[in-house]
Length: 388
Image 1 (cartoon, one colour):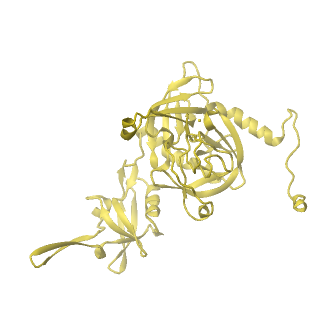
Image 2 (spheres, one colour):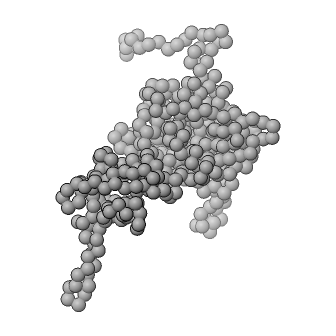
Image 3 (cartoon, helix red, strand yellow):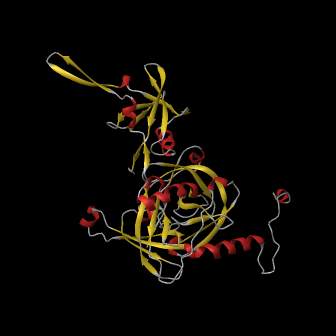
């Protein structure tokens, strides 16, 4: 994430939202956090608890310390510091505002020089520089971005005669609450800083700057601060199980509640970013729906899109005369209402979109549609879309 001293709730991103989030809604509602990238800146009960490990090995380290040291030694050289320069907006140009600088983190995931980070770390940047562990500084180019999942891939040219250290990707589906995790990043520009904690929760939902919801978010109490965005969250074997992306805080600094994008989402998205420079998503051809008590009423279909070709119906424009005037009115009562997809109930637009994005272009899904008081099944063959 990029860092800041703002007294607000923040995500690793390029601007600050002046909003505070009360902690309790987090237990039931989707998380809405803000960018956090830096602007270059009784006793009786205790006896029943298991005692912390204090045994010391031959090297003078406790078992816990040995894990921390081993993981850091293996992974820290694969963590980079990303410096960005973003152009001021037209309004800022008018008032002679200088270009903005920010910093974030990234992880080298391929010896060819591919670097994984957050989209909000690089969004709007006209100049990108990456500082490696040996202190060398290189220009980087954006290979691909996926704003809905707040992911981006950068590319640098490996230094001549050198071999870049990379971080292997783990499996976030195997995470459990209580598992040890370690975060490495550049909080406040302090390069390759290690913090430790546990998995506090899994399956959280986070709203990104693009407005989309990311499900399955990993919550951790490992200290994450402005500048940590895009850095790796590691398990005790040294594998990356998440990308640090946001914090929940009233002060803008770590309050013990941080969030990471699960690595299994990364493993699905990154190959497409490298190959196509964007994500090719399956498209249902439903452009807009209205959430109702019965389901999702179709408001607008893509002309000649998959849903329209399959026979899905939206509102109808009804014209009638009243005296000398012609009145045009939209009749929503004839629009189909989507109540499920492949027998999975859809309660919100995000439920529908998330299910479709789990498929591939060319696959067929079956919509359960409420039409004139009865439910009908409509097979729809998904097309390919590169829209973000």
